[in-house]
Image 1 (tube, helix red, strand yellow):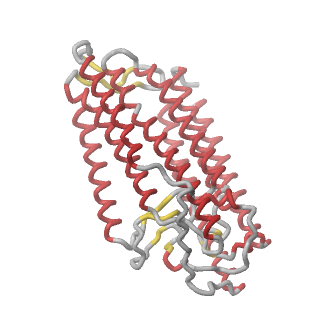
Image 2 (cartoon, one colour):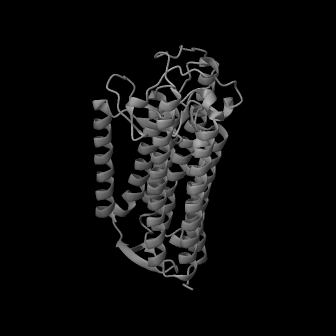
Image 3 (cartoon, helix red, strand yellow):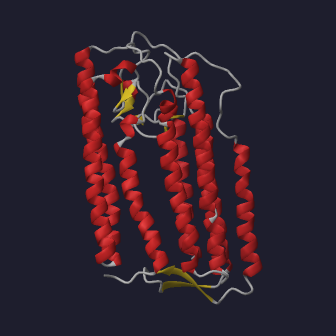
Length: 373
């Protein structure tokens, strides 16, 4: 059995737990989607009680859970008995296998639902549009003003670096092994002090973008029950915006933690304790919000009477079940078709420009990381 520093062992344990939590959320995703969607295919609301579709959902859930259990066991065994290199070599591919295999199972189920839909003759009577429900009492996402909360975190990170620069050791530990030994050092420099600030700014920018996308998104409403579905979507978007803001603030707090380690107030091992707490809180909160609300707030109105009619059918715009391409849709963002959250309309040139900009900013952050540390 390998020797692992206790705090590092705790962090790795939380990371291992992320695998079954991710797998469980993926496995039960079909049950968290709106009634009118089954494996990214539009169906009548009442079809959720169809025996064949229910069997497809149960089979998908069982297969993904089985795969998740096997990969989790393999990762746990590698953490317990193998070397750190073997553990990382097992865990990273395990997450990739789970995502790829789960997506492949979804596509297979989607193909079966599409065939069944044609056999049953389920068609939309017409492209019915959702009535605009302008009730100010309905919940809404948090405004971008809330993102100003990142500013104190960034300023705190900068202040710690400036105040502690004089007492900073000449050589700063940057990386530790699983047994707690320092494996990489950096010389004292203004660049090292600047890195945690840049990290906090990058986290703030990423999560602010997520917040903005919710505010700019098309509403996930149902034409057959516009008022109820608009309220449910408002609740969902409000909860998700709070979650994203909370996750962003927690992630940006890693900046001050790094700064405290660089100036010698904390050791790298000591910073792992709050890091473990941050990871655990994000995992639990994400899972809880997903299960309680469902996609578009579908869980909040799950008991409403289901309709046999299909108000609209936009399956033709969803490529491979997850990529939305509709040049005639002015919306840049919209709710995902299979999963919890939002996606982008790849039919809009702005989507490609935004993606290119994000890639460039991320690349700049990576380059800055390499140069400063």
